[in-house]
Length: 207
DNA sequence: TACCAGGTCCTCG
DNA sequence: CGAGGACATGGT
Image (tube, rainbow, N blue to C red; front, side, top):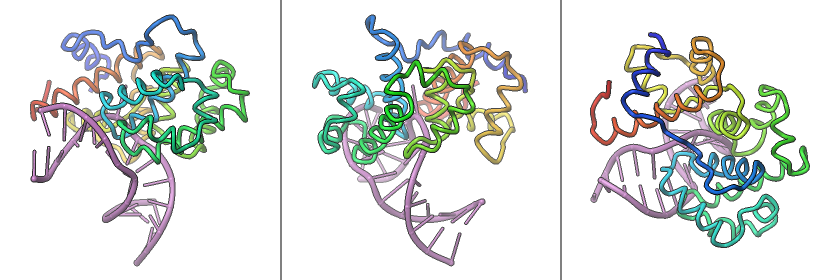
């Protein structure tokens, strides 16, 4: 199985995905914040629901690193309610922002200047950030060449007869076989999600 | 009406 | 460790 060919096939079938399209000219810090918040809110949740939560934060003029960090957890939970697991996620968001504040003075640029794997370890130590969430942040907000693995990715490989024991084996499988390119990783992951969504809608095996 | 959605943490054996 | 449960809303 050659991931490069699979990528081309998906790209042909689904077209460009333009993920994390940060609307408006907001600058890096705001964009990175939004991506990281989105990465946490989308855990086991549809992006459609996450969008409602993000809109709530914007409407409440609460979508800044400092506001999210300092507002009462109960209030944050209510704002992100549509994304589900809102109590858990309010806790996770504030744990993450506390980390960014404590280690990097609230600067995402500074945080993502760290070497990717070192930062990955730090992120994984934060409550609520597991491998997929950490890798999504690194790839989409930090522009680090880390291949993101999710449930669809595993299903995608499983259909081709490839399975592994743990997350990192899936990640390395792709990283070893693709050229080390951030845009490629970003697009590939998004395409696999597009494939997965279509598959679950149509209950079939897209290929 | 059930089941699923771009997971993660905690508890038990 | 590994399985099993909790967390929760909105769409189909």
